[in-house]
Image (cartoon, rainbow, N blue to C red; front, side, top):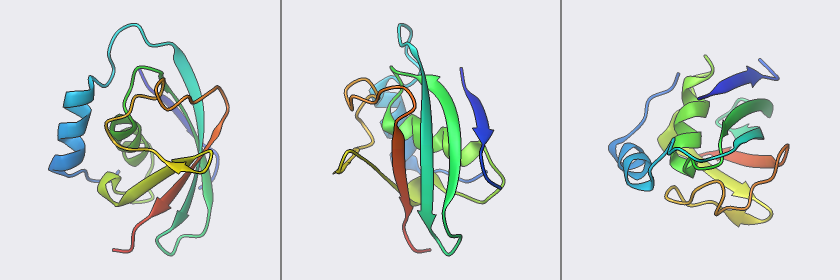
Length: 113
C-alpha cells in the first residue's frame, strides 16, 4: 500500500536494492501506516520534498524503490542514501527498526551519476 504526494515538482532499481527488499520482507503484513517526508538533494536538481505513506514494516530499500517510482524526476533507487536523526539508514532496516515516527523528515542524498 503506497500513497504518494510530491510536494515539489520513475527511476530504475538495481539487483542489490531488489534483493534487499525481498530479504527484508518489504510490505509485510502487520505494519502500521506511516507518513514519511523525504527531502531529496543532490544530482544537480536542488532540493525537493516528497511525502509518501508506507507501511512501518517496509524496508528502507522498499522506501527507496517507492520514492523512485513515485515521480517523474528520474530518481534512481540505487543512487540514494537516506539519513535520519544523523545516521545513515541501511537498506535492510525496516522503518519500524529505524524508529521513524509520523511526519519525520528523511534526508535523501543522490550519488553522482
